[in-house]
Amino acid sequence: MRHALELAAQGLGAVEPNPPVGAVIVDDSLRLLGEGYHERFGGPHAEVNAFSMAGESTRGGQLFVTLEPCNHHGQTPPCCDAIIGEGINRVIVATEDPATHDGIKGIQRLREAGIEVEVGLLGQEARALLAPFTKLMTQGRPFVHAKWAMTLDGRIATRTGDSKWISGEESRSHVHKLRGRMDAIIVGIGTVLADDPELTARPAGPRTPTRIVLDSAARLPVESKLASTARETPVLLFCGSLAKVESINSLRKTGVEVLQCPESSDQRPQWDWILDELGRRRMTNVMVEGGSEVLGSCLDAKAIDWAHVFIAPKLLGGRLSLSPIAGSGRDRISDAFHLESPTFLKMGNDVFVEGAITPKIDETVIC
Image 1 (cartoon, rainbow, N blue to C red):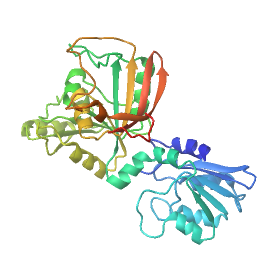
Image 2 (cartoon, one colour; image 1 turned 120 degrees about the horizontal axis):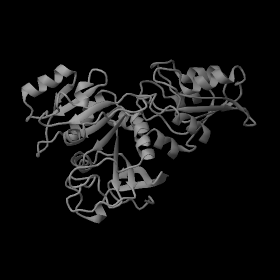
Image 3 (cartoon, helix red, strand yellow; image 1 turned 180 degrees about the horizontal axis):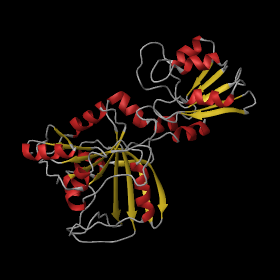
Image 4 (tube, rainbow, N blue to C red; image 1 turned 30 degrees about the horizontal axis):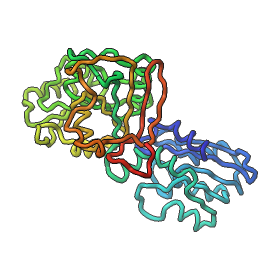
């Protein structure tokens, strides 16, 4: 099953909005017969790819699969039909399908066909891998990643706004890999006006993320890198009541898609409305890259699911230097947001920290 999970992870960025799934077929002596994973959206599922590798040697074998086999027609036929037809005797499933489908679910269908089914092996690991798919299926919203690079004293820019480059080359290369499996990159207009970024993955990854700008007054310059490349790589701008019709029309002429959305009390776009809209577009993973006001408002809205933080061994100092997260923040240390079971990795001279964000301390979780 652990190998099946490793296989499943190879599909990240290529299969969404479908789930990443891996499958391994063995005989009674656990000799490998076939393996596979869901490689691309619309392509064969993991089980079918594993059967293709195994050929005709699967009868009486065991199938280890990271997600409950499907029993419905989608882009491809039901995997349960293939499993039953191939004569598999036993199926070990890491976790049940969180999506709601009409009719009999896969596990029930297999058991009714006389196949032994075991559920739960490495289930926690499988559910972690499936978290973005689960959120999209159950909440109708994408999984929100937050990314920032900061100095050892918690600064993302000097008092003059200079921020290039805080992190090293290895860290920046990792950011491009992350971008390459996202459906969208989200920034605020302040970041665009200060840095004129492209927000693309270089080199390109399996996905081409939509560049999203939160810009209440539609101030995005038509000559910016984002607007001038909007016909090649999508740009979506969320604005509010402060936006002038002339500005909106000028941006639309460049190819920028502009949506006016409800605002919060401080005239900022509402995260709930934005995430509902992105979920409607079947976006599975989106990454918020800043600046500090955007990250702060996103955290205040409890909208961040995962944090990717790059810490450089540098000190800036200065009471006017920018911190990564603004917003209202928390009033008490006991109410602080925590990274759940974070991982730490050295990247060049930097330290990379990532983990799921939880709003309160959970005594059952070691943080």
